[in-house]
Amino acid sequence: MGFDRRIFNFSAGPATIPTEVLEKAQSELLNFQSAGMSVMEMSHRSKEFDGVLEKAESTLRELTGVGDEHAVLFLQGGAQHQFAMAPLNFVEKGRPTDLVQTGYWTQKAAKEIELLGELKVVASSEDKNFSYLPPITPDRLSENASYLHYCSNNTIFGTQYREFVRQAGVPLVCDMSSDFLSRQLNFSDFDLIFAGAQKNVGPSGIAVVIIRKEFAERGRKDIPSFFQYREHIKGGSRLNTPNTWGIYLCGLVLDWLKAQGGLAKMESLNQEKAGWLYDKIDSSDFWSCPVRKEDRSLMNVVYRIKDGDEALEKKFIAEASAAGLSGLKGHRHVGGLRASIYNAHPAEGVKALVQFMDAFEKANG
Ligand SMILES: *Cc1c(COP(=O)(O)O)cnc(C)c1O
Image (cartoon, rainbow, N blue to C red; front, side, top):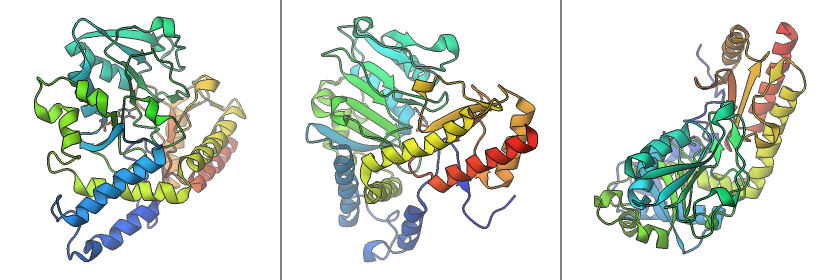
């Protein structure tokens, strides 16, 4: 292969970062804010980096509307580090920890919870390979749970929750890795939100964390301090030397999001983008989507050709890739095709994919 231009990247993560953001980073790479060095080379306690971190936090607060009751953190280790950190802090012996089982990422989170306490799967869609969202009613939820764990968007199976049923008094924890900042949501309702940055916020290796301060305070104190949320809050995301370059890039993406018109604008754009793709998939029997219609994700569109013609799917992936549409192979747990169309994936990319599907269908239908 080899391209002399930026292609349309449908990868599930690391994923597309806005070109404007990369250009800005490029222009500031050698000499950041006239400091005579790159942001990667300066102290994480320098006044320049103070500015980077403060701005990233304030823009994130502005976009999400979370106030002083919550802390905003940029931590290392990504989402799976949070799968460990949340139970370490909050799973209590003698109480269940509730979890909604929607596949793969919640299975991973569940495994960590089980190491430390009693897991209670309050709903699951495993019976149909996680192709729908299991309904949740308050009577299924424990009254005394350590917390309730959700994954808002199931990256691999292509489902996305639109509302979060909870039990009064039980903390609400949500893995928003693959749809964070893609829509308007009452972020303050959650006690802990975390998101691996590499889908919607920036580069990999960082988790953006929003945690209710009072909840963080209730976490265990008899675990190593580096795993305690309260210590990271006290340290202002700088308990250790953080990934300064990554935080800087997250800040640029957040600025970009704001300049695009914030989450309301993102939400309508994302509905539009996903709509084009699902309309195409639903338009003929050549394509199919295994996910129940009302549960479909706006971020990860999972689909098949002729209900799973693997040879034809392989051909599609190869030809699409040669045409500059990359990353369309489905996850190995589902097979088929997947188009990940996060915030930064341009509308033109989705249009190009729909056009390509049209031509492919005509040639192979
Ligand atoms: C990608 C992803 C993860 C894993 O993120 P890491 O940063 O690699 O740990 C967890 N949960 C969801 C929903 C994801 O999409």
